[in-house]
Image (cartoon, rainbow, N blue to C red):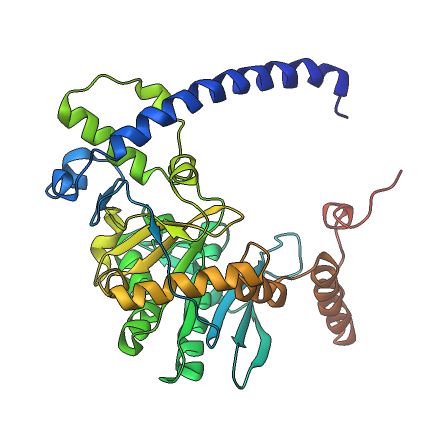
Length: 375
């Protein structure tokens, strides 16, 4: 049992330290913004990840700018997909996992409609339970399960683009999270190549249709722009507090620079995993009113001013309609979520059907203790 009285002094000490750190951070942000506005795109044009071993953003516009999104669009369709999973319970009679993909299509304006559904699949075959990474096979759980779910989300978004795209009105495809698949960086080259090949089919479909596609990252903790500023300061030989700059996030500076409805300059990501992509991924920051979010886009949108403006306008519309978070992503999540009671029901359903076939599953105490706690 947690002894609260022993925790309180520790909490007080931590809060005091964080308060002091925050005061120093606030004073440093003014310095950082000033330096950001000194940077020109050509200053870092030839700087590479290989030289710096740093995940930084290369600006393709003046990085200190705040750009107002002027366009407003009321007649459009928004599509999104999201996933949730039931991971393998090793105490159960046999291993299995479930991936449930929720998806949504919302048409606004003329001929408006609402379409939502979900598809769940149970994976239990030997070739589904194990993933070959290099010369070894691993049980699909943790990051491997998350990666598999991400692929299913991208596959569904690709399908939605095929089904709902029209030339009459724009169709915004929203991906929940990053388009840069960092989590596979430690896997084998074969696994990474196959993963990226399948994942970017969604991006290639959007390119084919010239459809707005964006990765929406709420609560971003990225530091790509801060790393760019650090590299710039080192190139200029300026003195600065490296430890202090390390605690500042990109969102810390852009929530000061950007007003509601404004976006930042566009930056190209230098993440090494993008070497496997057919084209780079770009990003910018957008003040949607409730927060400053990181938006990731494919290259074909980054260099198409009209399509970029449409993408920003539709994201702002979705966030406004959703009270600060895109409606399409909210609804897709609601379709995808698997409740605790549903997880228990699935196990009990298996047990019931097994018993009907004469297979008795003797639940061990560890398995039972997850459901019941005796007092």
